[in-house]
Image 1 (tube, rainbow, N blue to C red):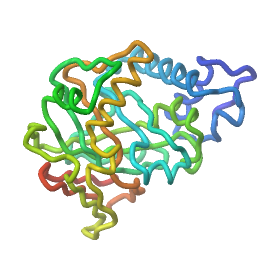
Image 2 (image 1 turned 180 degrees about the horizontal axis):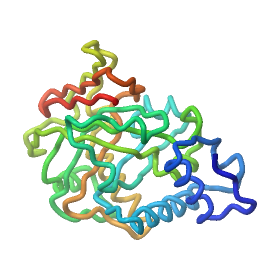
Image 3 (image 1 turned 30 degrees about the vertical axis):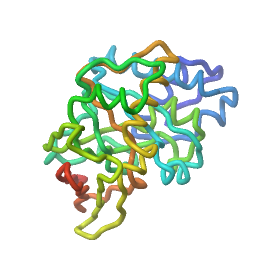
Image 4 (image 1 turned 45 degrees about the vertical axis):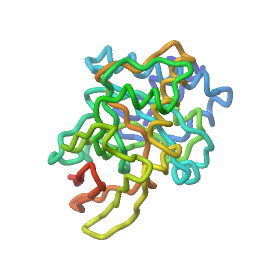
Length: 264
């Protein structure tokens, strides 16, 4: 169990959250100890956390949007989306198991995923200009794993924790965005063959490209941009479901194929 620092700083908060991840020991929200943690500072904690991961050999490969659906916002008790960072260590090949022994209390959620063909930099990015920068669209399943007890946190807490990032899977099907109507692209989520939820792309900010534009414009406020070749997870379409070892979870999309995962 990590020991709370006597003085909270950007560096000490990042250290506490990394330690929780590495030791698989969840904790109460940082804001309970550091009530002055605001959203701006939380993103600085996230930056420090990622810098430490990069120093350990990880490579930044993209960005994820969090809490882009009303269902997710309601479940987590927050009212706005957020951005976080993806690294190469988070990628799992379809067919490989979710490594339960490395995680605390993983949940999964289906996502519409963009792969960028060109750099996308705000401000002023619209859904139309964002979609024009997309090289391909894929199905995905994100494995989220909050470092907070029972997934309970404030918005600054979850931003500092890199939006509960953990692992993710990509489907094999790649489509040109011009071939799809992503507003009505549907995903049916099943566990052990039984449907547990379904949603369309409209659940993600009305259109996943709106989430992409939000990411570009939000990052621009911090002097950052989305780079060509990056993977963008646009946000969970449905509420997240817990992973139970040995019980296959399948996300079946209308035009993007399906992704199957199972905890080990």
